[in-house]
Length: 334
Image 1: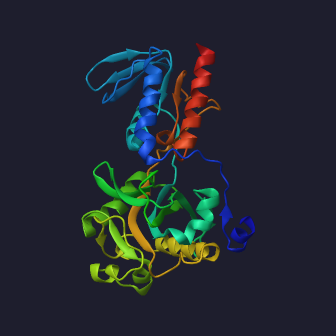
Image 2: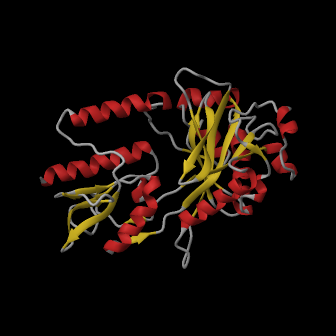
Image 3: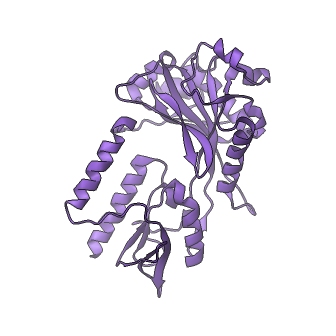
């Protein structure tokens, strides 16, 4: 498989994964919470942090929106992607150095599960990297869901697209994201605002998520319900509005997506099919990257940052590993 990928100008990234699954997420998170509570940890939910308290470049604790003050010897900032904007504002207030991360924008691809079965059977989630011929942009597959379904996601009021798989409720389709990473240069410093703007165009044109067949996209026409009804791939997201993604994405993003699908077709014939469905927009917001030490400590003593919201990881596995790294350092200090 590695050889076939190389011949297709794709880089295969073999990664050992532990697949938790959407259906088990609630149960696993509940067990994690119970594990902590049983050991005397107080867990506060729906409790928004308003400010991080710092004195003489040493963290002192946090203040919540309700005015409660919690003093602490060590604090970990892990707000997730949803809290990326908050972390950026807080970092600016504390004078922490930050660098601008790329923003990942693309589509959710849906096709018959049989097309990807020889890959998902081996890897479950195959991770492939490609550099577009036209613009040399980094394009990657992400979050592959064999026999899964496409779902809506709310990103701070913007309706975007995502996908998941259930352990027991299987569909005839497989879905995955194709994301184009874009680094911005000076003077632009608002990649999150850029991603939100692209997403807002789909919301404006389609009232939410837009669906289009690859055949219609390549032919330069919008998809309609009549044409989608004749499609061999039956969409799993009924709420998506048939439309034209070329009115949403910049040209270079569309070129990267189409070129990636052509490359994928060489290792999985049927990917670049007129019946392949594209949903947009899928976007991954990452905070500007904080300047951190090897143990994930910020320039403020005993103030740590971890996860996607801190701009240092991409996904659950990496984020959880970052949390462990910061926690071990804190244990050594106390």
